[in-house]
Image (cartoon, rainbow, N blue to C red; front, side, top):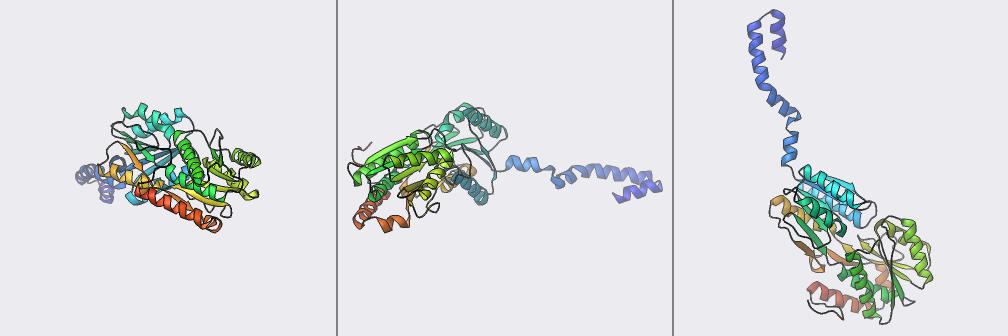
Length: 344
């Protein structure tokens, strides 16, 4: 470059023209070395996006999903993106945005994302759309199915073991099928340990309102409930607040290990190891071995589990703890069938 200017100043036009030709030939390589190949790198990169229906600060369902996205980034070197969405229209719009941007894998974190995935999938065949929950399968649409009812059954036994009023309760965000099935299993587990125990089931109608969660918990204590199993994401934090501030109310956490949120009043948590499940799926997509299907995870996979707190071991009788351990062992072996259910 400096030679060109020197030749121009000296009037050496022949050398100047020669250097200009060389410079023009070098420009594409020069542009590439300065970042001109960034688009090409993106096109060949492994890119993963996550849509959550609520804030990742909930320390539960959405927070665990974001932790899974970070694990994919750290373990597989993926480029990642996250958006919090609120309405079905947003689900579809953001699915399309990521499909148009050639993302390899897009995860809609919830049963409610299924319909949007179906509507957009055909337009972006190179993108894999995965929903956490549901049964929908298309050539590039798959679903993760968590046997959340298994540890929920154990949680019901634990709640019955410590209830003094023989009234326990559940609080959900909205009545989605996976939430309802886990609450049903919770009630079955409680009734196995304490026949005749009463279980009250309630839904808030949203997943974000902490004050509504707290108010509902207080209202349930007035109806005699002394143990509450919450599955309400950010709204569930209000249930923990009610338990910390109240007297005699115990709580069961969900989705993430929430035992440390209020250790003095928490019996345990029904945990989904979402980061592990996300990583397993992402590895398949990255390697090209992924096949669309319903991918089922149970207690035997250690993706869903009951995580007891020290409070349970200190407060429950040895007889009840032995019964809980026995059922949990059978579940891990795949040989436990709740009373009243038949083998499919």
